[in-house]
Image (cartoon, rainbow, N blue to C red; front, side, top):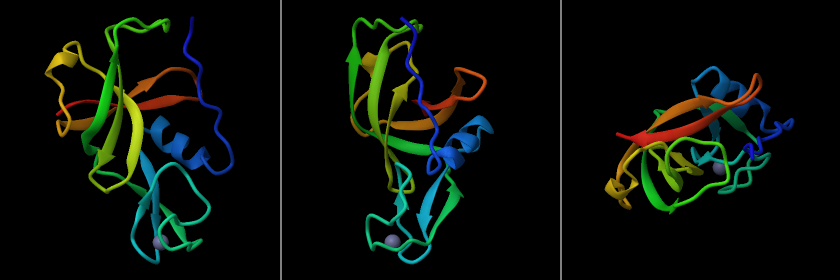
Length: 129
Ligand SMILES: [Zn+2]
């Protein structure tokens, strides 16, 4: 079974374009400074519509995670699904690429990496930092 891939929408297209360029950007509110992810039209903190796409540092920590012992996806290694807190404060559900998931723990530092999965889509993922 192949992995189902995201379909970029008008609001998320800049995000996917930045991942394809391997310089991930998320939105930052120009009024209150909060970083938002997933892509939104209105700031979740102050309801401003002034949202700008900004590059992220690529640093984050594992907020929580789970390891699928078996996956029906055609992927190599264990499938680690994690909620990652970016250094900028936004939360992102992603995967942790590691051969040793037993070494992961909540609070572990991770860094952004990318996996090109189709001509259009490059997925942002994380690896132990
Ligand atoms: Zn705001």
